[in-house]
Image 1 (cartoon, rainbow, N blue to C red):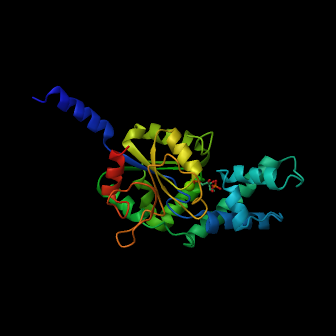
Image 2: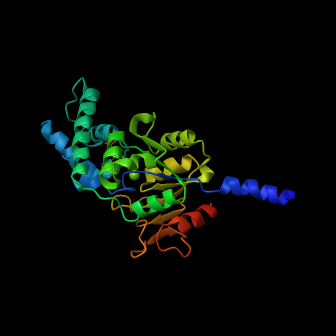
Amino acid sequence: MANLQDLDKLDTDKLNTLEALIFDVDGTLADTERDGHRLAFNQAFEESGLDWHWDIDLYGKLLAVAGGKERMQFYLDQFRPDWPRPNHLQEMIAELHRAKTHHYTRLLSEGVIPLRPGVKRLLMEARQAGLRLAIATTTTPANVTALLEHTLGDDSLSWFEVIAAGDMVPAKKPAPDIYRYTLEKMALPPQACLAFEDSRNGLVSAQASGLATIVTVTDYTRHHNFDGALLVLDCLGEPDAPFQVLQGQAGAATHVDLTCVQYLHRAI
Ligand code: XBP
Ligand code: MG
């Protein structure tokens, strides 16, 4: 007969069991911003005859705002106050965003953007171990489909129980909406999950949802404030290409595998 302590331990263990990994997309699954989204925006601007051009440096500033439509509005407000606004500005931005998404998904279909190191390996290991997987991203759903299909194959969409993206929620990152939506759909408490992010906006969104978060930085986000992150790395690493720990403790791990995520989950 188990004594009360054992029952308590069982409940605690159940609550503390790692059930799911939730992934951000842009900057986390793949480094998509500089050579993907940014080029697609510029192609859409050029074909519309606009004198808008987002160079690498300016785009880094514009990434302060999540969401492509919101980013174009931010660009006008912050950098083009004198640009003559048409009456139908919101429709124009929506049309530009549709064109941009067309260019971006075509870039992905040409294999321009690979997955980041360790991403495919960790996803396969997680699936093998029966961990549930989800995506929580600000980007447009069509962009997620294109990235997954062109990097992991057509059936990879089914690996993710929930693909929460873009306008599915009222407020984009850093608001918690997209992670709360994902947890609700999975009927999981945040304590049973780990989130993977690349930016401060993403970390704030995940943390506000109660999620412990592992960050893999990009060139655009390396300088961000990641206070509160469980661990900050240069990438997930591979067995023959160890990660570099930028903040936090990874124990004896040299790359993020299931042993590493279980170790980190026990630390929260
Ligand atoms: C990153 C974003 C997105 C992309 C552009 O999303 O903020 O807006 O930059 O995609 P996340 P859209 O890091 O949450 O994956 O133009 O489709 O918004
Ligand atoms: Mg991101």
